[in-house]
Image (cartoon, rainbow, N blue to C red):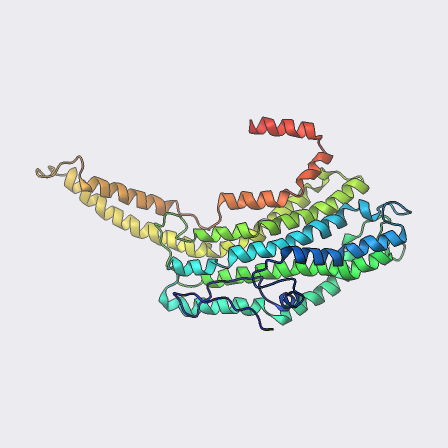
Length: 403
């Protein structure tokens, strides 16, 4: 079965109207053959159910057979392990939902470059080449094989065995002098559940790389950015919508960190305040992941703003000198009233235009986008605040801040 081809634009032959960083690749083809996905990525519930059955349900069954479901001889039984339930029942579904969100939000954005006439005719071939290159990277078999090899190698033998396991007896492993000894459930956890989870996660990082690379290639074109555009980013304000697409991905990372923190708080006696640095680093990384790609337009916007200040400054200087000479340095025209003169309105319009150029931003990133990424990242961690502060006291403090 061949890769799905995006529909073509009706007004620009050869240029895709739809551009998706998630609708392609061998893993996507595998899901299509299994009837777990389609070209619209609408079978979200089916994919969530299938992955949950594969990565979580076997752990439940094996722990029940081994007597590690609720109690037994381990300090952390399966049903009390907040981390594993968060990872497989919350993070994995969020990673799958994020595919649909990104697909819907990102696919029309390249067409906006054409609708707003930001791409000159001389750069149209380069724009098409950037889209074609992104689609080739998205559909690359080699890239996904490399991701799978990384997950099976580094993910299983290094990350899981050395950094994920708790230093206490759990349903999946028991500490020993030679390292953690996995149970049968731990074998499935380490060789099936975790590699699938890590593959889904690494695949997302690869998709963000494709999106950032595409934006970088477009930013190097001779874009028709207008310094007096009312959006104050030369006409690129539509790119801020891309940050909305990645809010679900940011929430998935917040939940991914909230699970381990909860495990260490509930079973190892840690406090949420001990992890302030980790939470701050998470927020910083999410800002870079979601909003960082938009910064590739900063040099182009800086150049546009500098050019606008120079050109409109020159125009304003010429106009105000004529205005000054006409109305202040010699007797005003007898046949033209000062009040209601078109010169006054033109002077005001010129001043407004110069002010728009002067207040032009150097990136399409908005305050709303920054707050959105922050809120989406911290939302899954917010319930852990109750381990530090009682709910009643927390509500009183929030009421004092808000009201």
